[in-house]
Amino acid sequence: MKWTPIAAIVVFGAMNVVGHATFQDLWVDGVDMGATCARLPLSNSPITNVASKDIACNAGTSPVSKKCSVAAGSTVTIEIHQQPGDRTCATEAIGGAHYGPVQAYLSSVSDSSAADGSTASWFKIFADTWAANPSGGSGDDDHWGTKDINTCCGRMDVKIPADLAAGDYLLRAEALALHTAGQSQGAQFYVTCFQLTVTGGGSAKPAGVSLPGAYEASDPGILVNIHAKLNSYTAPGPAVYAGGSTKSAGSPCAGCENTCKAARRRLRY
Ligand SMILES: [Cu+2]
Image (cartoon, rainbow, N blue to C red; front, side, top):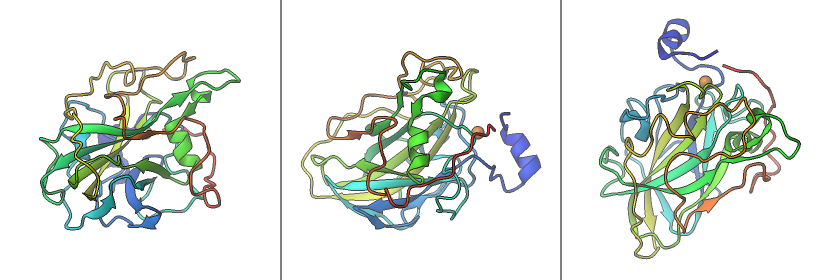
């Protein structure tokens, strides 16, 4: 079943629904920064209105004081879990058959501890989207970014382009759950913005898109029935910037092979 925000308020009060999730933590070149530079979402409820300003950095979030310093060309790891502070691999990072792509964007801002993101120009630096299951079946049986992030204990590596101009950036991590996306506004976006200062690098200032603006409720990557067989899938938003990175859905975890053993459950919410 699909939880509406109203139902979640009535039933749970604190609005932390099982299965739903928030990107909470960031690693920089393998060093755990925890949530220090994260604009933590107020709940793990998804954003479902792509025309809302909440699609940028989640609902009701505020800047925090700390920025994470990241050298251009290095790797950060975004980390998502269902509940605040629960970083174990014992539970799925995002649960309840919430299948879909995982993507990340950057936007150049004058001060990442102040910018609200509303005028930001977002360029995509990472995508792990979809691949057909060679054994066949429906979209539920296929490979997805969110399956990969579950397999990898909630963590996914994202390369910071080496040619970026130094300065402050907002990093926007996005997981998109498509299990109820056969109806308009059924797709569930789980997003968190992290505050970065990028050092070194070059002079590139990649062109971006606006959020809200770049996504339409009718986009084929947003309005889609994944319970049928899929012959292709195109994630929403622009192409990944040339200096960014991709992970092919279903490929092994990078860097956390010894710890990435999430529980496998197949429930729907
Ligand atoms: Cu859900």
